[in-house]
Image 1 (spheres, rainbow, N blue to C red):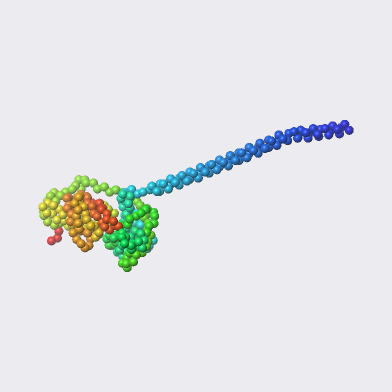
Image 2 (cartoon, rainbow, N blue to C red):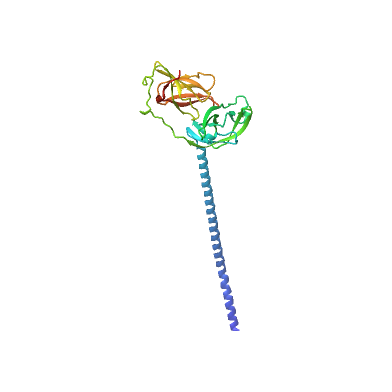
Length: 322
């Protein structure tokens, strides 16, 4: 009997001890659980912050890229550029490898392209519908000489086309010999600037005059080299010139009928012919040096004064046939 009572007392004592410690254990479990939740929440917040930072950085980089693209404006100069069209009939002449001469001046861009033939007689930057409205600025052709890989040459029409933007399609309408306008999409891409050609006057290219050469009054011819502009225009060489009282007057014939005047210094010279390519009679103050001239062309949508140099070669001077 005494042993049973004693055993019962031990059981009751153990139960009381477990009961007294259970709240502590429960509280400890709650504390551990709370710490785990807090840590998990903190980890989640850190992950979200890093994600947001990454997104912000990516957005910032994209914004910078956009700003760079928007600020990528071509500086003034002459470039080669690809001229893409949506037509197998309307494209750059094969002799020019799909490229034209892109001129940038005061932020405005114009590309000169030589076509395959003389079948396209006018262009218009815009739609065919707008090309037929009153006041539409129709582009007139130039007559270009192209040289093929086999050495053969041909005369084709070329055009100076205003370019609103690089790498963006724009509308160009054309009219051919059948007197009907057609819509097309074109794009100018991959501009590459040409190296600036500087022509220096050296001992070998020192300017010489008719007096230096002891040229008598009479008619002569001389080879003439022209530089400047888009590189598509040219002048007839050799050119005829006349010497009178020591003064030289040259007859300069352009490869286009659309030059309406020339400037030598402040003096303006009009064409001396009415039909065919433009011909001017201009003074030549010396040979063997790049003489600066300006020629105004009406082949574009608006008249353009273009700077050139003409260099007459004294070594090639011959008396003209009588």
